[in-house]
Image (cartoon, rainbow over all chains, first blue to last red; front, side, top):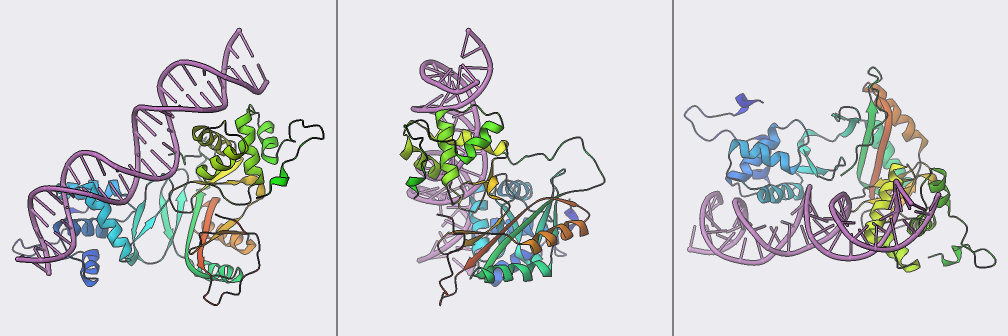
Length: 163
Length: 163
DNA sequence: GTACATGCAAACTGTTTGCAGGGCA
DNA sequence: TGCCCTGCAAACAGTTTGCATGTAC
């Protein structure tokens, strides 16, 4: 997509560290070529890729990487709080850099597209509900499934949650 | 848990159809011994069992059932809208009879226990958010993850659940 | 009687892990 | 240089499925 986004120093030096790479260094991770690669793919992603997709994109940039490494790296990043593991159904984990800020998702049931949103009132409400039940809120998961009123596809609310 | 809940006719006839079994019949499912068994286990469950747990409970009542059948039946019930598939993390699907009404879940991150709750304000808010984004709300998923404060006020047993 | 449900075990999918070799600090 | 990372493939867990047999309607 955005090949121009590969920042290279004037004389062919290593590209500038990506957003996520900088975070990795900050948290003291040893930066190998593979980790740098994954960091860059994640930095450039505007969606929520799963491991397979990360592997595909990383391989395209440099094929000397294996899925096992993607799994290990992604888990490491999760432990360091650099990405969050998401589950939108479909059985594969998807990943979301935390530095994009806290947000939730609305899934378009017709197209499968995922829209991010934030809502302060919801945050407040979630905390209030947890407290009402005698808990302090650690985390939350909110997903809305919606349909654009405009288009009227023949199909009924499809149930494509199969695995 | 509630073994006394096995309803038997005066003279040892077949137990009355369970809540879920009635729903199955309503939707035209062929009722075999195994399906009746699973229907009963689900009717009596007050938590959100996974397949393994359903299998365990069903086997205890009648060992002539296999996991494969539990998987197939549970999928069938989902297609018929009789149960909902849930994912509370941990990699196994858990099941929730729909006739218990619409509700959300708070998961105790320390014990794994699941507490059900409803909240009218949230329903309102969810619809409003979807509309704001240009969608009409089809479905939603809300899960809160919480921790009981150290000096826990030993919250009253509300609607408890989980495993 | 027939179409469909079941049990068994093998197949599949996503993910993790042991081991030998390689690379970063 | 030493420790950790990586690739490979085998191991795993949850779930699905093909086939022969059994059973509800």
